[in-house]
Length: 590
Image 1: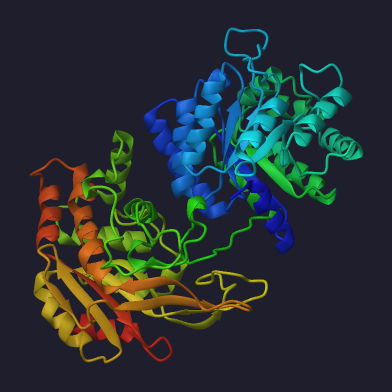
Image 2: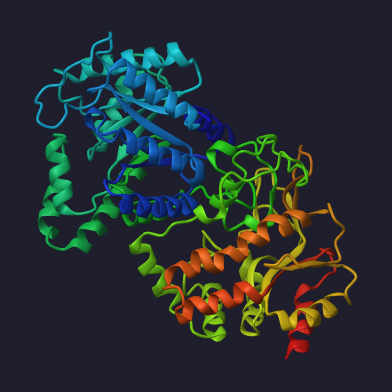
């Protein structure tokens, strides 16, 4: 979806101000992995309108920019805007980059002339009639129509290569007239200069959104280097304050948050609706600034996080709630997608696009970090403790969870902790919900203006030792509203759910819409696909951290080889009580 369409939708809904983030491709593979983790956190917690990825001078990071843009567009949940510059780019290079972006599902381009490459003093046009950013905008629009949303750069203080600010603004008008949808400015620290720039733009007929670029001060040396390189005007009071605290890194960061907050507040007071943060691939200062401003627009359209390339998807099996990247990879070639409806799992159109062993791979640094979180377990009690620590937020992930545990899990957290302490190792779960408002901070999703109502069947999924399986099933079978499936790595199947059955796990009722059913429990998908992935995690993901035949590896292998995986649904979402059901199960097991 084009960013300009997102902006117009936000304005129609009254969801302003909005904000976006910029990142650059790291030079190392490990840096890319760490950036992906950071972006996922920032997108998941802060919900930016879009994110953009830079393009190095002369296309020096073109491959990395495409790679990072593709990954973020596919998995992060954010709309991606990719930079594209003319510097050292032939017409064939531009065509290749644009075709690749389209192939990867990227809908937005920031069209730039670009800076001179390293070692070259002046910028040299690449030829083919492409001399300015306006030429690039025109070329994209002529060749691709409205497929790409196109943004261009603006300079509140005037471009360093332009003789006057007025001439620079006329040049900007040329870019907008060529087809640009919006303007993102270079960073600045003088708000009055920016506001004057906006007024001048409006006076000559530039009516599209003008989004100010904000670069929070992260450290003194970086600030000094960037403002000197870009010849940025910095008010004297800011220079004086930084000179006073420049040797205290924490004080500089605190001042960066204070200054960024003050600048954005002033612009909001003058009617500015959007803000673009140059993150420098860092998180803390941007996060603190947004929290200070109290403008974080965090809403869930569905109980699971959508990605930009799957806006029409409306239904997912509950099993992959915490492994969205795995789910997206596995349904990548699903023929029926993107109709937004979950098809019959027995259909030949339902398939997975890669061997399970490919996902995921840990870097050495990640391995060290994960061993710190999960330890080197040598007993079942050690395993149980890892699961309990995760539920208590003492560690931030499990091998089955790409994301932190949902807030709604807190509602049944005591039950889940008790289950883990009794040897039932819990994965996915949700409490039952009967008509809570969609604005509810724990379970809410979907539209809140006007408000709707949320419903859920209680659901718990867990691994169980083989010697407890029959007792668990006997206790569950006493409850006529309970549905269950249990299976092991050999494919044994114990269930009271008929083959081909799909159960609505979550649904919502909203004004002027059909009943929305975003989460389901599909018996055959659980048995044929998800259970195999869930078991595989014991060895191929958690087990990959340890030497084969080590005590920890052998412990995980024994669980993989002998445990059962259960899913349990309480169908009565009004009077059912899954906590009491499992209290009786745990009492029996004791």
